[in-house]
Image (cartoon, rainbow, N blue to C red):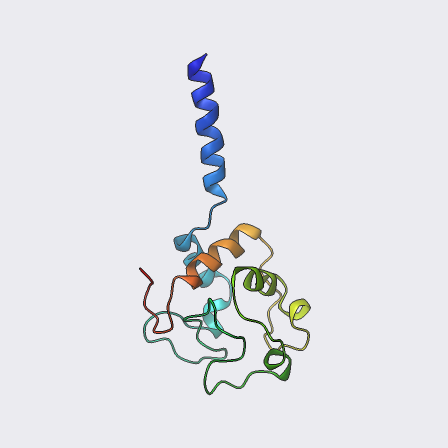
Length: 130
């Protein structure tokens, strides 16, 4: 009987782990979704079609220096955090109508969570936070 109970507990625990945020999986999302085409992240990140994503967690939207943001993004009044990022990345146009980010969004909640885990680990200098 104890064996079955222990097996049930382990199964439940492993199911929960599957839904946890995973930065390594998020890096794969970043590279397989079109993120990397427009954005860079990490040491040496630079402006591409979109701004670098270093230090995104806690950064005000439209605040990366010398990047030409859309009026909609400049006026959004968003500070990037997990909640705002997840909402935006799932539906950019629905979250900030008029944004020039031409992307349909990432629809898989696990991919969105993993992508956030990957992005939030970088500080403003592109170094992985400790």
